[in-house]
Figure 1: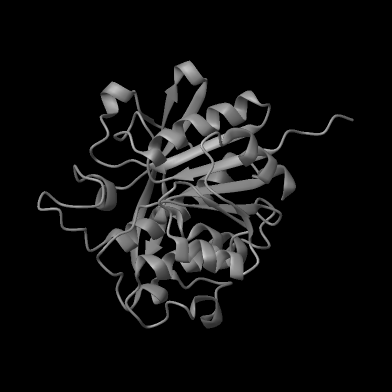
Figure 2: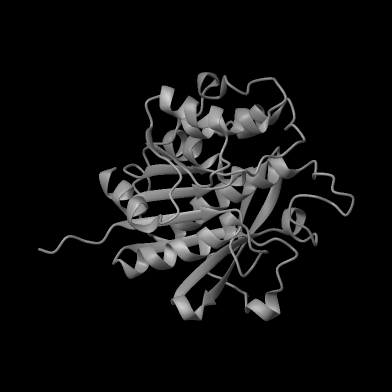
Length: 268
């Protein structure tokens, strides 16, 4: 009986052509296509930021996936799922949308360059929205590859909240580090907002009752990941050292990344 292809879920905070070209957005556009061309199965998710032109990029709502509510900080937030196709690559990209979090015409900062106070809530909503949508798609990922700090909560939720869920119980997490740091610290009650069945105080001791920095959030992601990649030459050296000291499988920065990444997926 032929072995079924490895299934890789890509979760990214930015993908071109939907957002401007950066190292991350370009990699997250090219990598899934190359992985798919190598015979692996893929799904791709990103936030539906308000600056994304829905008409030009032909986004449309997926009614059968939308309609769920997620509770963040004691408030209900409707989850809307949209999808678009990158025809040249024969790929679909799923978008997590919500009126409170993703309607503003900006990504992470206002017109003055100030980071939004609710970026921490947006990250919680995004990650939980992706995981709940994967369940609705009835698609079990073997590998979950996370790109950018907005995806940093994925390892915690998969390994603690969804650890017994048949869709995620055997999933391995790869976390890529980039030079994408934020400046405004997350609030002291951030750890409280994360709490769900399966997460205990020890799991979030790193960020408990303190303002949370980019380094803190990245370390939390590393703690619950199976492998860590330097996604750019400028990835934080201290965080890479932290991952190494915590005996995570590591891959340094490589320009020609497709085969090394696939080899890493297969080794997990």
